Image (tube, rainbow, N blue to C red; front, side, top):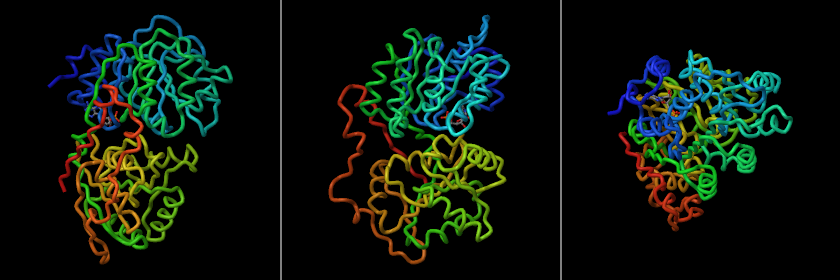
Amino acid sequence: MTKFNELNLLDTILKNVHEAGYESPTPIQAQSIPPLIEGKDLLGIAQTGTGKTAAFTLPMLQKLAGRDFSLTPNEPRSLILAPTRELASQIKEQIDKYGKDLKLKSFVIFGGVGQGNQVNALRNGLDVLVATPGRLIDLMNQGFCKLNRIEIFVLDEADRMLDMGFIHDIKKIISKLPEKKQTMLFSATMPNEIIGISNRILKNPVRVEVTPVSSTVERINQKVIFCQKAHKYQLLRKILSEEGVELSLVFTRTKHGANKIVDYLAHHSIKSVAIHGNKSQNARESALENFKKGTIKVLIATDIAARGIDVQGVSHVINFDIPVDAESYVHRIGRTARAGREGDAISFCDETERDALSRVQKLIGLKLPVETFMGVPEKSVKETRPSKPFRDPRAKKQNHSSIDKKTKVGFKYRNKG
Ligand code: AMP
């Protein structure tokens, strides 16, 4: 197995990685760091949970370190684009951790907060700018940020950007980047549009693909509980009171649904907090902070708000409803069993959700063990499977280039439970 000290990293970076408690590089790190240090472009097909953030930040920090010139105001040296505020903040946290003592200046910008501090940080000059697309474009339009000096550009979670409707913003940002730079693109799946973008922006890229978090997901005990819609609240309360439940992340499809759960639990003296798009940035950050510290043990989240949540010690992911988009299931359950731990993923499924469950099972390639709550007869999922075989809408759009074939992400998750 490769060791960090075989990757030609600076001593300071090695020290920081050691302090972070990492013993050896994850597969994506071992494969990406050497070519990135050499200055190559990279196409990384990987999800969160694989260690991809360190895979791009470590070589990036190494390249930017040792600067012997002054920074130019409003013209950052590198740019990492991330789809959500949470993910952007977490990337920034990792940069601070791995970049300690390197004397590099970094800042994260996103919408939903005042722009004063962001404008000041840009004006003072930056080695690393982490940004969400919308606010970056706002600041660019106002003349506070120019991209003509970008030495390294990272597009993280490109497929998610597409899902969230950022594609035009991304194209606009890309059009402002200088020709000469190092570029990295990370995506969990490769729909056509992302293949197009990667062909446009990557030059002779090294292609690294890690079967998504299989090592992580193997550690997740998954099960589904059939119940009536009206009983889900009670079921949640029961699970939350069970032994071994430390930090729980509960997913709902809607913001309203998330708020309703918080109210219900509060009524039963269980403290929880919701994070979703209607919450202010401050409220979301403080909720996450309290969850990380363990002051609040139950976090209720919608899919988009939860993207990028990286909290070690999440013992349970509870799907209060089955996600309509089967891939969200994979993202949701990947919030537990982080950094080598075990975790439980429990999904509540009422009568109306059997088709959605079938799609999830089809995608992950296994039938989840079933339990029932309050006397709901166990129906075989096969019975409720739609007559037409499920086709992933993304797969439908994909073309048949060699990349495409290889990137049919192998959602081959094994189940222990
Ligand atoms: P990411 O895929 O970048 O979201 O990282 C997932 C989690 O793995 C984060 O909590 C990281 O701190 C952690 N991590 C990253 N690299 C390593 C490593 N080499 N060993 C152990 N944990 C790691």
